[in-house]
Amino acid sequence: MAKRTNKKRNGELEGAGEFAGPDAEKEAIEKIAAAKAASEKEAEQDNGGPIMDEAAWKRAALELTAEQIEIDHLMEKVAEVRGRISSIKKVAEKCGVDWDVIKLYAKYQKRIRIGEMGAVVTEHRRLGALMRYMDCPLHTQFGLFPEEPTGEDGKPATPAMEAELMGQHAYSQGAKLQDNPFNAATDTDKHNDWHHGWTQAQNHNARSMAPPAGEATAH
Image 1 (cartoon, rainbow, N blue to C red):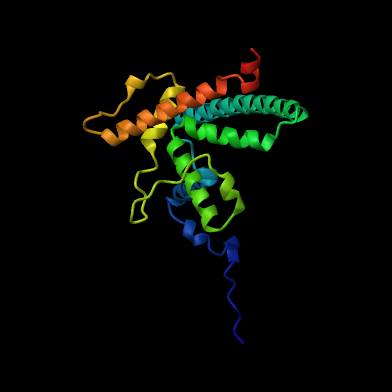
Image 2: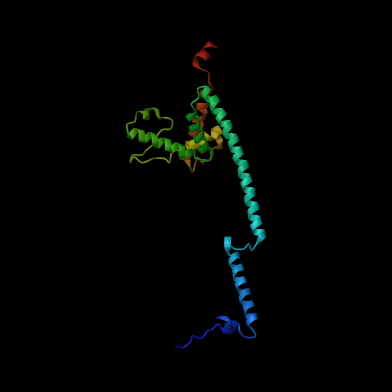
C-alpha cells in the first residue's frame, strides 16, 4: 500500500503559494487598503449619506427653528384670545344672551366682511323657498330677505338683487344718494335698484331712531 504524500512537509502551509514571489507583500497591502476603503465608503452611505453642503444644512435647521418659534408665539396669542372669548361668553350668558346666536351672527358678519353679502342673501332666499316647497311652518317667519322675483316663465327675473344690496351697504358706510355707481341712462335697472336699497336703509334707520308713539304723545 502506497504511503500518502504529506503536502505540509518542511513547514509549508497550504495556500501559501499565492503569496509567493517578489510582489507578494505589496499585493497583500493593496488588498488590505482596498478592503478598508470599501468599508469606509459603506459607512459614509449610512444615515442618508455624507453632508455635502454644511452651510445649506445649517441654514435649513436655523430657518425651521425660527419658524417653529414664531408658531409657538402665535399659538400663545391664540390661547390668550380664546381665554378672553371664554370670559366674554360667561358674562354674556349670565346676562341671558344666547351665545349660539352670537356665534351665528359672527359667522355671517365675517362673510360680509370678506365680500360675500350677496351670497349670504341668496342662500337665505333659497332656504326660504325650500321651506315653502316643504310646507315648513317656519317659512311664514322667514321674511328677512324676500324670495327672488320671477318672470312669467318662473325663472329669476333679477340676479339676486345685488344692486339693491349694494345700495343698502353703501348707506351703512356713509355714502350719499348721489354716489350711485350705476349710470341712470345706460344701466337704469341697477341704478334704480341701488337707489331703492339706499333709501330702504335710510328709512329703516330713521324708524329705529324714532321714539315710541306713546313717548312722542306724552311730550
